Length: 486
Image (cartoon, rainbow, N blue to C red; front, side, top):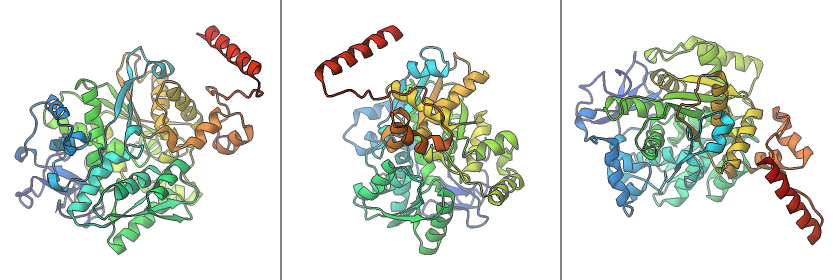
């Protein structure tokens, strides 16, 4: 467990602090106070963790102790699905916490989707993060990052975004009265309208640059460094502290039983990194006796993690992942001019900033990585929708990945599997309408250009004359067809 979640170096320097920040690189391991804002180690440039000296902190005897907070619904910190677990992210005083009631999410048994994946009845569950205020999982991280921003006195906050981060950032700025001003960087044509609409509607300054997410990420980091703006992307370690709570809610909704698998889309790799940290800490504290396996699913058009992990065998190696292999792959991308390209815009990322933290999670959780095509993503998305929970394309990568792993025999039909649905269906209605609609030209424009060749699970609208008898006849035919297929 050393080097994961408990302080192991420079303990004397931070001996008076129960929570602090520490460089992820074991050859550096520099530490910094919670009252500082660092989005990379100022000494070596590596990623930074939030670390706790658990021996000096009050820890619940059992995870079930958190259930008592459900009775305190008028307390904003107990109402929040993030901050009711604040003993497990104890970096902030209660009076500095910024919350808008995030984390009221759902873990739903999904037998229809399970049948599509190939699971036994009752063994597939969907964790629906689209129920958050901004419509995606990002709110879990934003509440924690905004809390830290308030702690350090930040006023201007910025992010690069494929859409969900910008929406969440704008919501927290506009819905709170702490004086935060939002600046958002997006790439040209690289954001779904449902998400862009949120950023614009909530009053954020939106800067569109020529390039993709990776280009926007580079620029927002440079601008933030030069202007002293607080960075809200998941390279911010406090974002990941909030995202840990998705796993706490999964356990809570499952009666505190640990599932066999957590399957999550892989983009910037913040969720997979946060989930791994959550289980590392819970295991260390003795609050769980086993950990689930972790599956991280790339889109084929943005497959950096799968290429590095599965093909080139890059591993965590106690924080010393093979930087030469990583650098060589990135150089190949640059030399060939390859840009990330997938209908799953939320994970359309070639240079995931949390790569090393994800490698740590994969090692601890005996993880696997796979990639799925846009065709597989859109088919899975249609089955998720038919099962009752609409999701954006990136979310469906988790279901498509579970199906692939089931076909490979890696996941057994009797395993208990939780797929994370990261964002709401209305985040990207363009893709949904193109898949289900009857407009072939629109299908080719939106999906055909991405390699999607068919809509095997489409629910197409039926066009009928404005005539009562024709309408009744159509409904009767539809009912007969449904009965025949039952």
